[in-house]
Amino acid sequence: MAESTPRPGVLVTGGGQRLGAAVCDAFARAGWTVWCQYRASRAQAEALCARLRDEGHRTTAIEADIASEEGRRALIAKVTADGPLGCIVNNASAFEPDTGLDFDADAALRQLGVNLVAPLSLARLLAKSAAPGDGIDRSAIHILDQKVYNLNPDYFSYTVSKLALERAVALQAQSLAPAVRVCGVAPGILYTSGPQNQANFEKASRANLLRRPIDAADVARACVFLAGTPSVTGTTLCVDNGQHLVPLARDIMFVVDELLKKDSTP
Image (cartoon, rainbow, N blue to C red; front, side):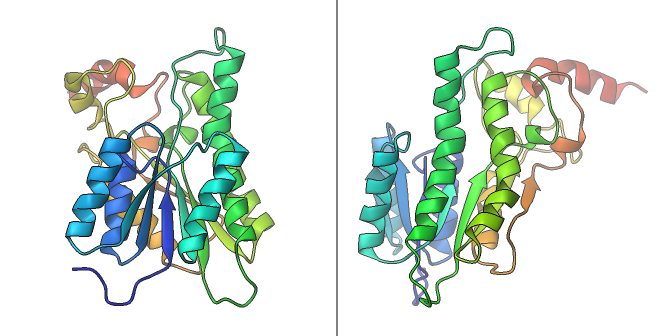
């Protein structure tokens, strides 16, 4: 059932699939008007929004190129023309394998553009959309990665971009206050990625303190909590079953067998 009194709008970037879809679903069920941004996943985004509308929720799929400032400005203009925007969940990310020795400069800049510049720019545009005294609590939630607290050198450029965004959470919270609150959410492993197969993922998803997979719905609910709690800003919440407290020399997909073997040794 949709809530009778709608909340302001929420924009979820990369909302058509995986974690983005879970975030759209959670906000819709919490009564928010949801804008599901996509770039290439049109079919998935439209199917998700159609399903949620059939259930009585207010959801719209919207295509936009968040890698360019022009695209970001057009996106915010279109969304705010429909009504007030209360939250942006910066979920979209670029994820390309490389190392500190072989990274391609252009590929690294693309990842920095999507993973760092776009979230910071969208949060800034959200702050600029605020009218003095309009009474709307606005927040930007940056989706990070538990590895910002548990470093390993795999996916070097991606990791650098997420490290920079994590450091920017408190800084941007200071910079945009009081117009916008800024928070981070750092999930653990939720889905297969890169060369990982399903069998490897099944093992890796349990390589955390609680020895069980992380539910994407928990990460999504954490975003809803932060968006709905006006006293929280400048902080990051880890939703990873304690994965960030299990030190690893490499990405979990490459060392999970060794890790679990040690764990089972008497």
